[in-house]
Amino acid sequence: MKKITAALLAGIMTLSLLAGCEFTDQLAERAADMKAITTEMRKSQEVQVIREEDKTVIATLNTQEEISQLFEEMNLAVNWKLVQNPKSETVSYRCVLSQDDTQHFGEDKSDVEQSEIMEMVFYQDVPYITLILGNVSLHFQMDKNIDPFFESLES
Image 1 (cartoon, one colour):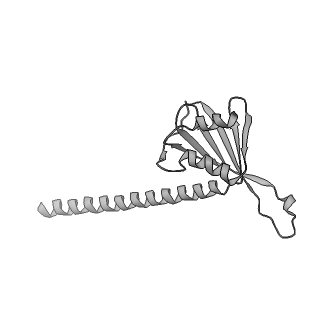
Image 2 (cartoon, rainbow, N blue to C red):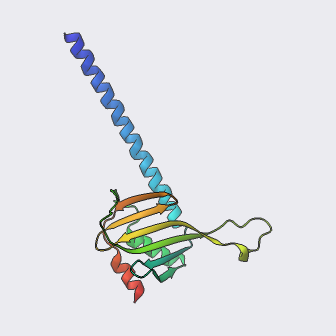
Image 3 (cartoon, helix red, strand yellow):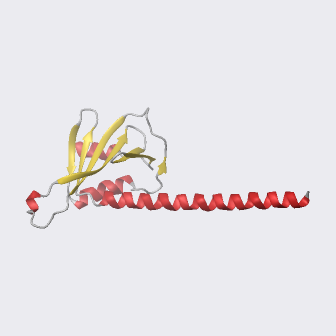
């Protein structure tokens, strides 16, 4: 009986250690994914800020200083928590991030167009953000709501 109990206990401990390693690996993958996303966001060369209420472009950020100011306001990926889709929340602003396409040999710089690389959706009165990358949507809770920043762009 003691051997069976010892074997069972050893099996449970082994499984819990393996599960712990898998969880650590998942956290490392998630951190690497978030780092890749933030790197892509920082590559953007233009950010259009759109008021969701009337679909009006209220600002176009196209200098690195303006774009960095937006990311600083967002506390980009610092203490963001992955959450469920905030379906019941009202969308307040959207940001469309764009980047120049690759200039190929023989093409004139004026022929190079911009492509949308990501869309960020912000919600009214709550610190949530949805990052849309192609067909993938990731929902996060941020440290603070940045609607006041967008409102300052309007005035």
